[in-house]
Each structure stands twice: as C-alpha cells, then as structure tokens.
Image (tube, rainbow, N blue to C red; front, side, top):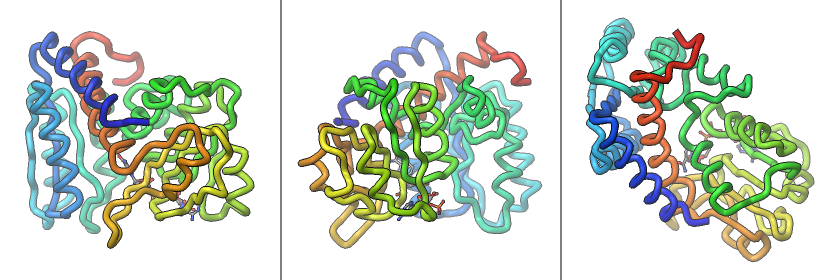
Length: 279
Ligand code: NAP
C-alpha cells in the first residue's frame, strides 16, 4: 500500500480547500530542542506551507515554567489567526503533559489528543482524530480492504495510534482485538487477522510466520537501527500478505497529510460547522 502516492493526492486536495477558505492558520508549539520533535515539526511546517496553510512556529525554552506555557497556549486559543494548534510531545519532564493538552481549545486540537476529542471518538462521533489512525483508514479505504465483519488485530494500545485505530476499525464494523505486552501468544491472534495493524515500536515484532495468508498488514513502526529506518514487521511478510505498507513510504507520509486535513477541519469548525456541545 503506497502511502506516498495517496498522501500526495490528499495534500493537493488540502491545498485546494485552503485556497477556497482564504486563510488557514496552523500554529505549532515546540518546547526545548528534542531532535526527533524538530524533524516532525519541520515536516509538518514544510507540508503546511506547500499547501498554502499559514504555519506559525512557536519555539519555547526547555526551562519554561508550566504557567507560562499555559498562558502561551491560552493566547493561541484566543487568536483569530490560529485555526489549528498543536503542542509537540514529549514535553520536558517538569511539565504536566496532560494538563497542557487539556488546556487546548478542543476545536483547534489538530492532533486530536484533547479528552473531548478522545471521548467523541469513543462514543462513535469522531471529530478531530489523531492523524496516524486517520491515515491508516484512508489507506485501507484506498485499497478497498473489506473491514465489515473482518477480524482486525491491532498491536499496541497507545492513545496516539493503538486505541484510536481500534475505535475507527470498530466503527467500520470490524471485530477488533487489541494486543499489548501482556498478551499471551501474540501469534495466535495475528494468524487470525484479516487486517493487522502493528504499532509496537519494536523491529520484527511480527515475522512472516505470524501473518495470515492474503491479509492486509499495516506497519506503523518507525525504528532507527544500524541498518536504517525499519518498521515493526519483517519485510518477508510481503510474501504472505496480500497488502503491506512499506517503511518508509507507508503510514509516515499519510500522517503528515492527515495533520493538514485536520487543520482544514479546524478551520471549518471555526467558520461554520461547530459540533454541538464542544463549547
Ligand atoms: P508506544 O506509546 O510506545 O506504544 C507501544 C505499544 O506497543 C504499547 O501499547 C505496548 O504495550 C505495545 N508493545 C510493545 N512491544 C510489544 C510486543 N512485543 N508485543 C505486543 N505489544 C507490544 O508507541 P506509539 O506512540 O503507539 O508508536 C508505536 C510505533 O509507531 C513507534 O515505532 C512510533 O515511532 C511509530 N509511529 C509512527 C507514526 C507514523 O506516522 N508512521 C506515528 C506515530 C507512531 P504496553 O501498553 O503493554 O506497553
């Protein structure tokens, strides 16, 4: 499943929507100088700028006091120039990440991390959903993978990938199994998976002998090894599955494109389409 090609099309669509909206403002807040976070912010900014979205790069020192960060977030919440807002995680240890995320305006919460957005997803009324799971669903739709009645197995239960993708698959009428480090006999579950989503952050957590013949496998993992960047699924799985996302070039580009898609959604919320009970 080619994430690069689909992501390119989504980005072109986003650019068209940004043009028709006139102005879309997207602010990112980066606290400190975590190297991986710098890369993620740069990717999002480059993509936003290319799509005609007005990206604002707020950089704050690693030593910032929590109240000062909260005040900055409140300012961005109130700013008319900002439709979409994210605070890059992880934050330095002295900052209470949960408290900061809770402070975001839920309708500007482009990452979909605010408890209101997580709750709406849980209740089957997805509003702003984290970009990676949205990107995975878009890939499965693009390749016409049957989800209704299928057995979908997700490895990983993070708030960013595992839990939200499990909910989206459930909404699509799949029968969902959610696996984690306490799961006994992982292969017993994966071998029965028509759709397997792997987001563990461990190279080769899924080997070819764990994959059901003719299934669809989505490899979310990004692991930096001596051999370069690899996913969570051994490449040999391609010989067994009908579909597999490559790493790189699968889920990664989709995540960036879907952040932009969420920014457009935020802009629409601010103009007309405010979901009731959000404010
Ligand atoms: P995370 O917060 O570290 O969560 C990993 C999850 O995998 C945990 O629930 C953990 O179980 C489970 N797990 C780890 N090892 C396992 C094993 N051997 N067997 C079964 N379950 C196992 O990671 P994350 O943020 O969800 O990210 C997962 C991976 O996706 C990382 O490589 C990350 O870099 C990548 N990622 C990629 C994108 C993209 O755009 N491509 C976006 C986000 C993340 P416990 O809960 O029991 O600990």
